[in-house]
Length: 495
Image 1 (spheres, rainbow, N blue to C red):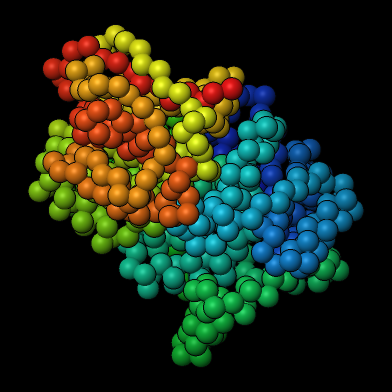
Image 2 (cartoon, rainbow, N blue to C red; image 1 turned 90 degrees about the vertical axis):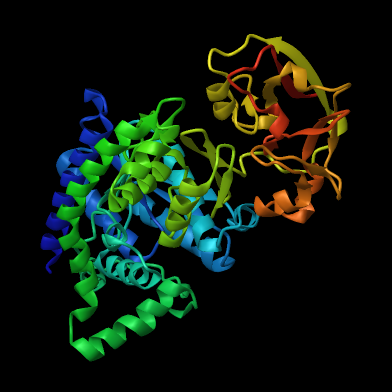
């Protein structure tokens, strides 16, 4: 592929994908000339994308900005990557946003692998830049045809369904992948024609992670057995499945709309708010099994931040067994610190890990109890509030700057309320269970490390623990249709 052909192909794809982003996200007319944020690692794919995007920007007059996140995992090599990206952007007159964040604390606190934690941080970084720069419509990454083939192969051997075999979608929310039709060989040839160096991460070829081994061992074996070009067949499979899956997606979308309830906010693929807080279990179980699975997975994707990449078909099958056999009030743990909760005919998802677990002393907090009007629908209110909501001042997102609140029936409070820190041996009756259990077991299920449990706050009365602040509420705090007077318990930081 010649240099001009490469640039023309990428430019055409950028036009197509940005038009899709513009339509899907319903941007205002003022953003019709919006630009892109290039995720720049310094590797050949992202460098080639940036260079082609610069040519595209000159032709269209749209802005191009770059972003680089240094994960600080490879010492001086990582710092050199950041310097390389800064120098490249300076020579091309491209604004670069640099950020440093180590994924290891996130991986430990959330029970994630380093790669997954790194992806989470990158998405959050890019999302914040899009929020701060409305002139940028989307993030463009350098994923190419070889990446697509590797992704499809990995998902195939992990037991994915047709959706998974589509691999990397050209458009995912506000992220676009304009190089999916271009091979690694074509990218390297373009960079040579441009006389443009790039950075190489040795872990991409030498690492012992799954993708590296697929790239280094499995795909070369496929070429040896089936001949040249056979290693690209998985990418072709993803392209062939696309139109059929798009048709099924539309049907699934409409079905989900019929079964979802509107007690809260989820997010759709374009990043728009969608009212999908709970799902009607009866209607879900009446669907054909194949459609029921698709609807469930789409609902989880919408209501759960980060999607459902760690949910496998075995988990889905287990969810449907539980839905058919479980009773109201029962719960089911999911991978990635999430819990499914069943309340009568409604299914909802509760995410764990949103509470700040830095060491906190109960002496720094006080309790306030106030009478509150009885909600018109106490059950719906309790479901929405979950393990305790946070009320903040000034729009802050840090719970430490506000107060945690829990609404419960006034009649359940026994004696005096007090707040204290977690102690080994604590027991309480979690929401949805008939008997008590060790709090340490619950925290282990929520993947909260033992060395961080000392900072967890508990609210108790004379009858025992009422509330693990921000994590779990006890069964006796449940709001019922017959609930009378309610009170709100607030945990407020002392200043």
